[in-house]
Figure (cartoon, rainbow, N blue to C red):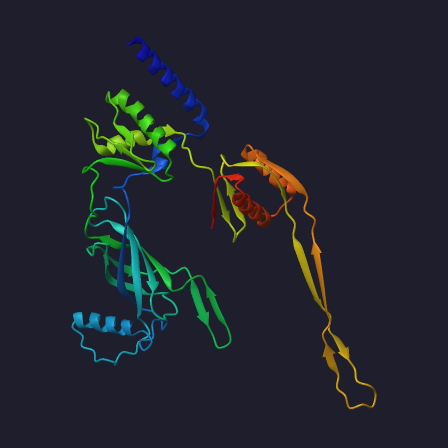
Length: 370
């Protein structure tokens, strides 16, 4: 019994020491996890925008707009003959929105409106009442209201100006929730999902939550299921919302695998703290090819019937820059960055070296190329 108590004290002392080491990088649990029940639900609908100043769909090129307009007028008791509509003030649009968790009936949400046809602009338009459905086919909200367009388009006989995207708009608060999303916090088990899955982080969260629940409830209420999920047992007293609020402010030092993210389009390179490189020798050089065009005019002889012609004259030069060789020993992130800077490379060269190091097996990290 005494030995078991001594082992528990040593384990507690070790946890305290680890917490002290990672205190500088401690993060609240609420900032690194999410609850499956607290997820947004995507909604989509098809509708019409009216009130445009001649910038709507041409009904001949967009027959679905004409059919939708005829159907809407029929429901309103207006009889329209087929082919009699020639208006340019209407546009067919797709309406999308995100339904937040625990939204009640009558809550307002923002909606996004995007043109489907050949409308030039949605500026000044009004969205007609549009039902928004979820993945299960049920209607959860309806949308209607004045459109706010950030882009603009203007065209004259000799010039055209376009800024932003005038065929996309938003309606702030234009959606009204008519059906509550499925799932409630009071039903079913509780779980925490890591935004950056990692086995070490999952165990740290479970240990930190259990340390709190032992003091508050006298028993462990958390256990890690895998590298993504930490399962929670409901507390014997109090609500689930209060329990999540309590553990959300607990701080842990999250861990993450070594990773290098490269964006070749913008030349952005992000290197994680735990990235290491085996000792290697690296050199990098480039070849520059310069093509110079200096055309010359060839004059015919005097009193001849020849014509003046332009003769091409092309000069091609190839120059190879000598790259210095350097030894990279990435024991730490600072050492790795210093070694890459010593070679004097641009981002494109660093990207090429990182990809080659990964191929050679010297880069001890995951390389993500975007």
